[in-house]
Image 1: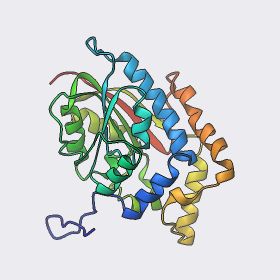
Image 2: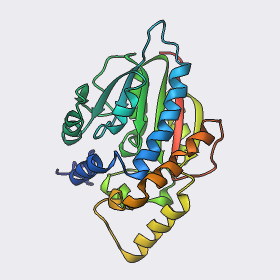
Image 3: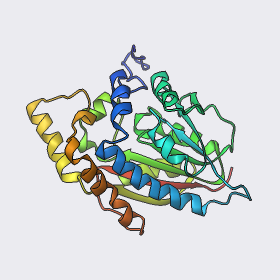
Length: 266
């Protein structure tokens, strides 16, 4: 895909990830320890959010996954409500449909193809860091939420943790918690919870990225770096963070950051 050009003639990053990464993601996200562990953590957050929603007598919430990728998170979210997905990549949506997920649309986070106040929960799981205008994307998420609806955000943390995956995914930035919560409040949300996550593997991930910088090693995707014999164990270790996070403990640092935000009014 050809890059766009920013005002002033500077090349802009594509909005999609590099095309080869979608096939890798589709292949590994069901079992790879990082995806599996993250889903366990996200599931614990979603369960708490849904339990706290005022659905006005409706039995199931309506959930939108912004930047739904190849669909594994949509499958997880479906246990909690009626789910829909939107992504800027036709390749990603094709993989969603291959999973049997058909409530998906082509669209950008900054211009969501949905009416105002349509959803009870909007998730953006490793998505906001892709946006040139992250504040605009967050404002759109707020627009499509009903009053009292929640947004669940999961983003990479700390610019000094930048690695190959940030490059191939065309990330614009990584966040500190103060930076993330500032953006969220600026978009008109009230922040209910903000914490770091993936404290468990912070040291080995930092060491691995420092090693890749020192040696110049550049795998096609960090998702290819996989010890299949240990996948289950590593996924359970990472996912075990949900027990601490679910009890209200906020981590002081981690590879990622999580935020739960509430739309107070229109």
